[in-house]
Image (tube, rainbow, N blue to C red; front, side, top):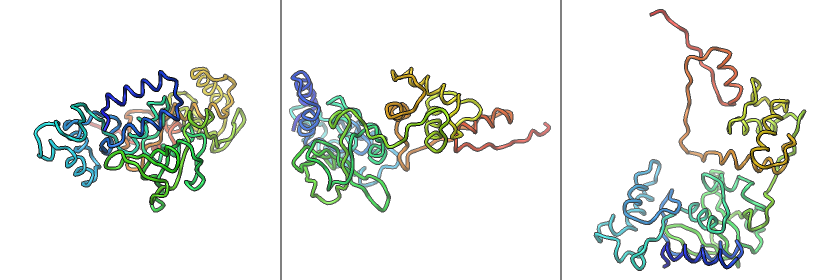
Length: 315
């Protein structure tokens, strides 16, 4: 098994040699074979302290807690130190990841960023991919593969197809499988491997456009801090929306034309970031002592906002 130091050195050598991103992804995944799985981890050093930290995370299933514990010789009580552990080769650390963390770190080694808070949101974010579909239609290229659970509608697992039907994924540890193994259902080719043009499924919108896509654009602009005035996300592309789009385009090095086409949609997706995963902790914000005009204006900007009226009593 390779240590983290050995993998880092190999990645640097590949980059200096000018190897392709596809080759770097494939070889980096192979170099990480055997590295340990820890739910929720993304490239942390494998230490008893880190494992203990992840064991205490809320929402962790008992089976995942036990997997983290029993795979560490210090936490399971078989030894007092990491010396001799399979995950401590030659006295050097490996790193812990879950399935998504492994895929993200491998692609980061090749200069590719995959956005998403979980497998489901990663697959759904078209800015990540140039092509995606059912596993039966997958070309023989380096790409990501997913397991879709129809009963929940979620992507439950992710791995990397390294060519020839071989898949490397992190489950218990980083290991090899095949596309014919049970469960793999979908594939997606990352931007940077399959080209530089992400999937775009939304129409071009501009001044005078109306409808759901305009509202989606307005909500994104509001989320990242642009002022759309008192009308907020009303689904009507007016002067305020155009001004916000132009300001956004200028800030992100785009052609400043006030038109939301493919490049602007992709930039908005990246600026806003992934939607929260099902089950992820969300928060409610309350702002006290606003008058009705202020509260109404705020609620227009946030589609799920509710205004609660409180009377003033005499002390």
